[in-house]
Image (cartoon, rainbow, N blue to C red):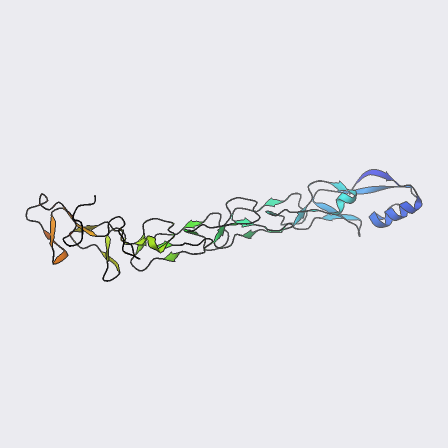
Length: 259
């Protein structure tokens, strides 16, 4: 150890007390004693009267003597110290946190939560329409197409009913489950069906209440026609596109082309 400026003691009794409680290395007849200086990353052991490495979870940034050398500094919440003899604390990385002081490691943010910055003492909840499937995420993921999630801090998203999908990522309600492009809603079956030949299907029918989205019905392609008794069977229009420009089949609603 290094040795610092001497400390003058006033009497033999004071010297004996100092020796017994600090490090006990001065002769009893000596009226002066010196204090050991503990280097950065160490602390003074008052029993062994020697400097020892700071334990994990704590550190010492500089050399100290006297009472200041007796303890190391505990890592703050959001930080950690992994090894013995540390001279500084480390930030918890993205996607991790430490809630208490004196942490030896950081924990991964739980499923359904995330940590977007370093040095966090707690993680944030994923918003509705987002999720994290496991621990340690720095950002939440949007619910994929065909799924939705209305709650916060979710570890997974709910699947739309079979044959339905969503129009965008991050949906938050089953009301957003609809028939996708290239399909149409069949109310008798309560599901989406592939677009029949000779038609274009814009999709957008709602799976829950069958309200119109982008276009809930099939549209005849230009140059095609169908009959009222078989509205979803397409035939070539003899008069060509001039007479059959493309519209909704008869009996399916407004015959005007929506595009």
